[in-house]
Image 1 (tube, helix red, strand yellow):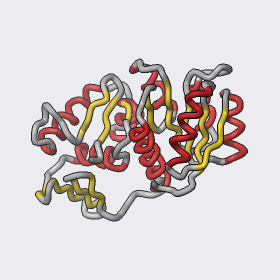
Image 2 (cartoon, one colour):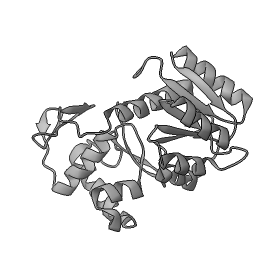
Image 3 (cartoon, one colour):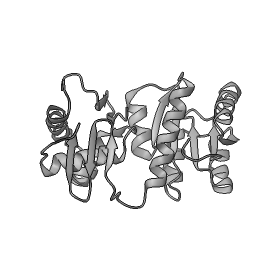
Image 4 (tube, helix red, strand yellow):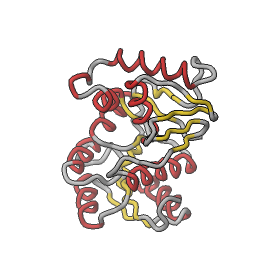
Length: 231
């Protein structure tokens, strides 16, 4: 676990789901505080300063996306949405509002804990560009030298391909929406130019994937964005 004893806020209005999450988290050494509504969740975040929030979208007094937007006005606490809503647009809205990840109910305990570890790790790494080389599966990035190797072999990337890969590597295991990637790599004025992203992702896959049509590293989240797989 990334942070033994990390405090997690569970915000869900369904008692059975809260019991499941409480038991799963406690068994892995996390401490848990709970909320049943949007207003209670916001108050708990302010009062308890949790290290991560598990947030349902279907809260009785407000939509969870509104909670994400409100909290992002004053806190960078990692927020993992857990919701029965599986529509692509719901995922995009939550992630673009500032959620760190999105899990559709039902989900397994192993996947939940993996997403929590990723979100906590990214929160701990935030605040500065990593200078040490980073390894993700067969891929290695040396940020200081701006060098990329795949299974020990150097890979030549264009400047935009490199910026795109760096963004994905720094968020390894986390889904990034099309809009988030476009704003970070091309700038705010290009947030709607999804065709740029499709072209460069195809180029990256040709250079990094043994079978570009069946990518192992650069995974597509249909209708939402992309995720760099860690394993």
